[in-house]
Length: 257
Image (cartoon, rainbow, N blue to C red; front, top):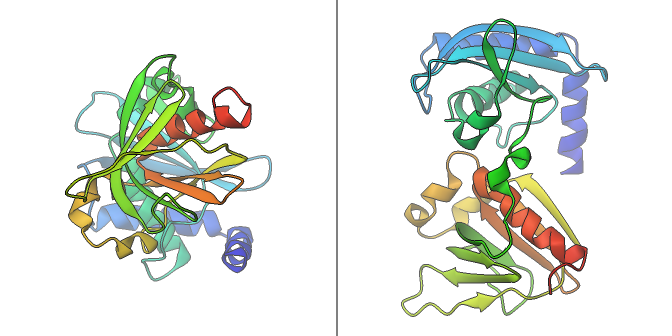
């Protein structure tokens, strides 16, 4: 992993990196390649942040809204998988499919309008963590579809699909594949929490992918909780990742038992 991160940083520093990604993105749309929704790419341009990282600005129209949308995307984050021929093609493919053409969901409520009447989201604009729905309120119950695995018992040591129930200070996970599912209470203390993008290649070990399709698509996240006994991993949709992370982060501060 460290080697891949080092290689990616070197790629980002290469000359004309931003131009190559932008051209690959334009080609993706021009060739009519797969999209989640039939968005229309209107305009692309480049700028640079203060740390010299190139930033893509893509303006597009979506079929479900009269608003013209803009995505501001730093080009220093690698794609989840290298599926195309070049790094630029891989990143452009992921931006087109998983970011531009993915329905905005709650992100739609956080769009910021500019003087041209374009509504922006992405790097530098409000993130999903700033949406009021992403904080689990006192006494609120939340039911979240997720994959779950851990490095210690009594939790599953391999990825299994199920449902995570969060309520007050209580977290309970119930498997969805057992004939007689037994709920497992997750009551261990937590040292640290982080959220990362799930590696879809690793998730292919699941025996019955039809059970996890709603989680794996379009872009799953891993909420990783380090505990005194080992690691817990909850693989959830981006919509739920902040809620799960926020719940377990409270255990670090000793706000829950």
